Amino acid sequence: MKNSLILFMGFVLALSISGGAFGKDKGGGKRYIFSLVGTATGELQEVPDPDNPGELMEANCFEFDLFEVKTRRELGTVVDCQTIQDVLGDFEFIRVVTTTTFNLPQGSITTQGLTTVAALQDGWPGVASPVVGPMTHFSAYYGEGSVVIGGTKRFKNATGISRLSGLANLDNMFTGNELTADCIFVVDID
Image 1 (cartoon, helix red, strand yellow):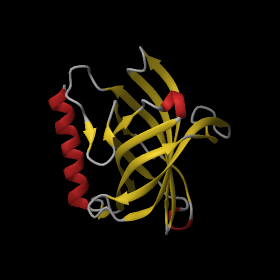
Image 2 (cartoon, one colour):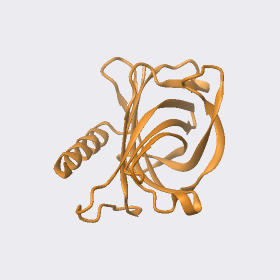
Image 3 (tube, one colour):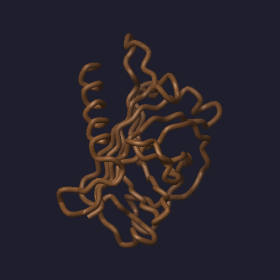
Image 4 (cartoon, helix red, strand yellow):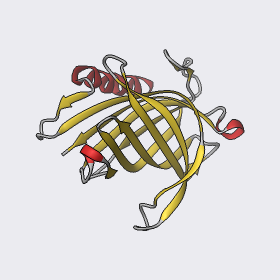
């Protein structure tokens, strides 16, 4: 399992590095590859409820700086909002509706989908991000169909898919509502 996770993370990183932040997608659209790294304190906000169109639901939102993967150039900010759907065990496995808004100079892109968050297994050597330190969970997300639910300026009326691969430290989530993350997002706009 550990080797599979390392291979998967390596594949995503290699894909990200080879494409840069603004690579061409084979489908004729635009591919954006972003990095979210840092620590943020959550704030409750309302986001669209995917199960009840036109209604809102409460989410815990974290704002981070947004970077281009290859050069680490800062591109803007990202607001990552999470609404827990299911929890198994002592937060070993969590299903989360994730609503993510990428704020760029040319406009914003908002995506929404289901993220799987799982605890790193006991006995694994200390998994740590080289930038933000020790991690407790990994997360993955791949949206089927168009997961772009909103956009502004250049991205108004955009459609597309998104995926996420990352690591998170949830140690301070329940005491200080603080999330530390090191994630890579790939967003393909049609």
